[in-house]
Image 1 (tube, rainbow, N blue to C red):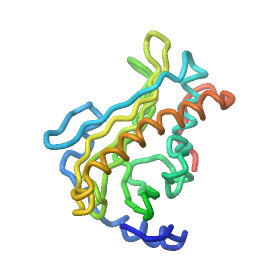
Image 2: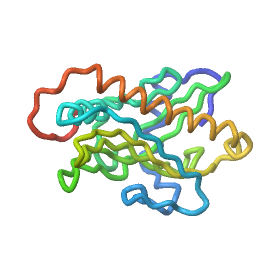
Image 3: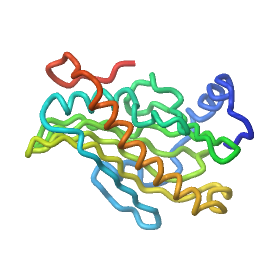
Image 4: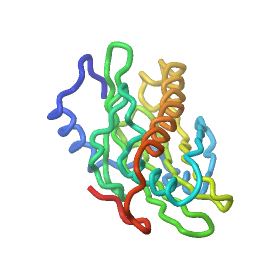
Length: 205
């Protein structure tokens, strides 16, 4: 959905409610879980080193649970208090050059593993009214060499005629988001104090 002005909170709430009953707009639901590369889609991946050891993993995990990769200014998550669990619908509000777009996505799955590497993350996928088709995964991984990484990976293609028409701009915005999102989460994770927990827990509301 496109706007000539920033939508009000009530507008966003109403929009999300209309999206909740909708299905996914692409057939490869869950493909990011195993790193599949569906044909006919643009594939993107970017990662950043968060540090080493348990503290770095816990800080990264907490930053991801708080949706801190969306702390960008020109991109807003509606809303970051949403619980990270399959089925939850969120909307992403983007300020473009003189107009706004609002698109909804549903969380497809959550990853919370301890072997062979400790990993925490989730993926969300586009719904029928989204301007794009595809899926995006956000993942914190604590590897065997003690390094902790944050990675974003996605596959996407235009769905709305506006995104087809402005495809070069759309791709530029997608890549800009990935570059800035990994840095935003890195900033949040490295500046935060380690959470006082001993083991991973489910995301809080």
